[in-house]
Image 1 (cartoon, helix red, strand yellow):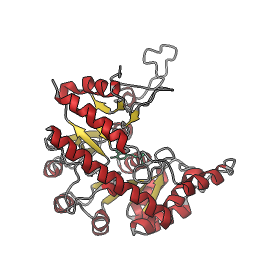
Image 2 (tube, rainbow, N blue to C red):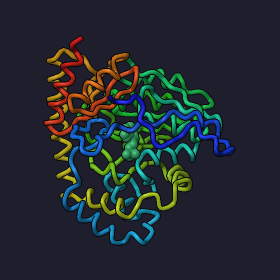
Image 3 (cartoon, helix red, strand yellow):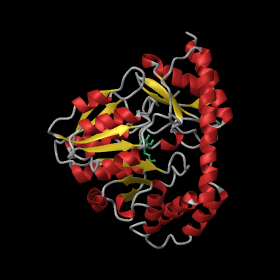
Image 4 (cartoon, rainbow, N blue to C red):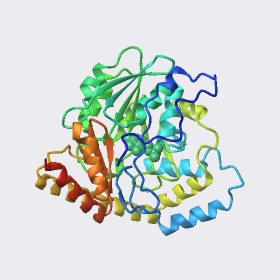
Length: 372
Ligand SMILES: Cc1ncc(COP(=O)(O)O)c(C=O)c1O
């Protein structure tokens, strides 16, 4: 059976130490990773929004070569990678900050601007790291409900900004519901938010977006010095296991984020793998894989609509089933049918788009969720 919450090796009843944890830490909601198959278990893993395809041979080669230098610290400033990412995003190198996955960059940018009790506004349900990162930074979460169609309610988020608000997180496409915000509504939103509030546009799934009305966040960043972009090589670039993410921020903010970042946070192996993935030939091959996943997404969405589902329109590499109270039961059913999904108890199930066989298995499982 699928347990509702899979946690690490913690022992909450441990009485062997008197050292208190910070109350904010003791109260943290757990980050629940997507379920993994047990050793020897053959299941489709659609629980973590990963890229189903492994690194390209040229990237594996770069990783192997870099591994030979593991006795040395990495380039702390990730100079070559920062330059490559800046060129990739069309910004300057002093506007790029890398980190150990974009989740680490998020923690660093909150550490750079949030003081005890400051408010951070974000949609909910959204990326489950947000409430944890805000609490760890000492901030106060202000969660604004996502609309019933899975879209962010940007006017409500703008209305939630007070003079205590330091940061607003805009997750687009929204994990786990799937829709992307539209250019116009994001422009209106940024115009409505005071210039001293950081607006973080979390674009973890950017490369999967095909909505012609989706925003050009780099253009928005250029116009608005309070806009920061958050991006990752975990999804489209298939490097989730090596942990490379980055922020695009105006130089003074970028310097502040860098100042609080873990020194040597991105390993040499990760830097070299990312550089190899960004080379033109590799990038073309990786983005062709993204195109294939987008085609699969459309096939899955069409098949689900034909089954009778009316789901939010996903612009990412996952689909969202708002199953409410049936969530855990349906996730267990999927596991029994060979598919690992990501349940959010009482709310819904997020299923990543995988290789065609995995998606077929999901479609079979989803058909059983309709039967009651
Ligand atoms: C919206 C969003 N932002 C950020 C991340 C973090 O990605 P990473 O830390 O692997 O770069 C994720 C990962 O699932 C995500 O869904």
